[in-house]
Length: 462
Ligand code: HAM
Image (cartoon, rainbow, N blue to C red; front, top):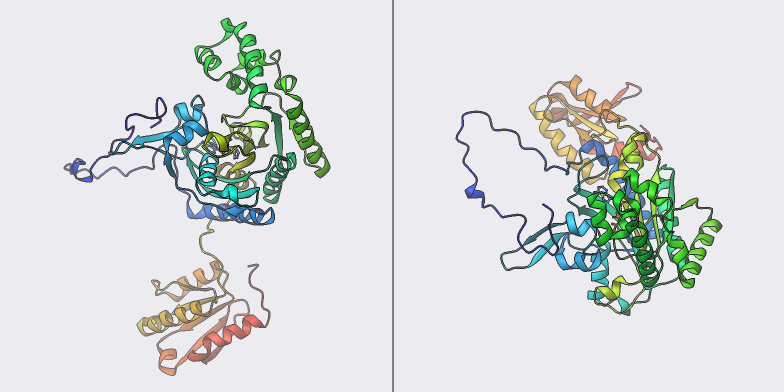
C-alpha cells in the first residue's frame, strides 16, 4: 500500500504469521489465488522478448563503457524522500513502505537513480577516475493506478554517468536510448526540455504560480493542491482545462539562465550532428525532483491509445543529487527505459508464435521399452555434457508422439533406442529430413553426431 505521508511512520503492511491464517474448514474447493493487483507473471512465451531486450541493454552498456551495478530492492525510505522529492507523486502516493519491528522505515525502490547515487557516495566512487558510468536492470515498485503499460512491479534498465558536467554526456545518453529502441525495431522520438539550474527553476516556478493563481477559479481541487505543493506538475496534467490554460502559461525556456541556455544549445547541436530526431517540449518537467538542466522522454506510436501516451523511458541531468545525498557537489546525468512498455511494443510488432517454449535442438532421443528408456537417459547426459543441444520425451512411450516432439523442436536427427539396440550395443540414427537411417555403435553415437554437425549441416535456422 502507498505511504500516505512520507516518510512512512506506521507500517503500511502488517506482517501476518502463517499460523494465524484461518484454517480451511469449508468442504468447498479452495478459491485459486491470484497474482497481486498491478503485478504479473512473465510467462515462458514472453521470455524471448525479455531476453532480446536484456541482450541489447547489456551490449549497449558494453559499447558505451558502462559497468554493471546491482543495488538492493529495499532501501531506507529517507533515500527516496530526499532523492526523488517529498512532494512528488512517487513519494507522496506510490511508495511501498513499512516499518520494521526495530523502527527502521524501509521502502521497495520506486526507481534506480537514488540508489545508484547512494552507492556512489557510500563506496567512495568519487575517488575513481570520473565520470563513473554505471548501468542496472531490475524490478521497481510504484503503487500507481494499474492501467495499460502501468504496473506496480515493473522493470527498468538504467544508465547513469556520475562526475561529468559536459553536455556531450546528455547527448550521448539520448543517443544510447535511440540506439536501444532502434535496435529493437521501435521507431521512437525523444521529447526534450531544459529545467535550468535550481535558481532559474525557482524563478520560473514563481511565474507559473502567479499565472495559475490568476486562473484559480478554473482549477480542480487536486490541481489547486498541486499548485501549492508542486506547481511544475500542473504542466503535465492530462486535464483538458489545464491543457487549454497551458497554451498561455509562461515557458521555462524564457527563464533559463545563460549557462543553462548554452548547455541546452550544445546538447541540441550534438543531437543534430548525430542526426537523432527530437521534439522540443517546453512543458516537459518529469515527475522526479532531482533534475537540473536537460530532461527528456522517449515516446513511440502504438495501436493502443493509452500506450501511445506513456513514455518508454526518460532521464536527464541531476547535478545536485550527489550533494543532496551527502556526497561532494558532483554533476551527473542518466536515463532509464521501461522494459514492460518496450516488450509490449515488441509483442505488438511480432506476435508470439503458438508455442515458443521448446527451444531448438540438434538431436532428439527416442526410446522404446524400459531398457531403451534407461539407455536413452544415460545417453542424454552424454550429449548434454558434450554441449550438443539434445531433446527428449522420456515420459512418452509411443514412438509417434515422441517424433512429433522431435519435429517441433526442429531436430535434424533422431536417435532411436529399443530393446534390440540395447542388446546389440547399437543405436539407430534417423535423418529427420531425408527419412534415411543408419545403425551405429552406442559408444560412438555422440561422436557420429558431432561429425555430422562439423560437416556443416546448419540447423540453427530451423
Ligand atoms: P521515470 O520516468 O519515472 O524515470 O521512469 C522511467 C521509465 O520507467 C518510464 O518512462 C516508463 O517507461 C517506466 N515506468 C515508470 N513507471 C512505470 C510503471 N508504473 N509501469 C511500467 N513502467 C513504468 C526514472 O525512474 C528515473 N530514475 C530515470 C533516470 C535515470 N533519470 C536519471 N537517470
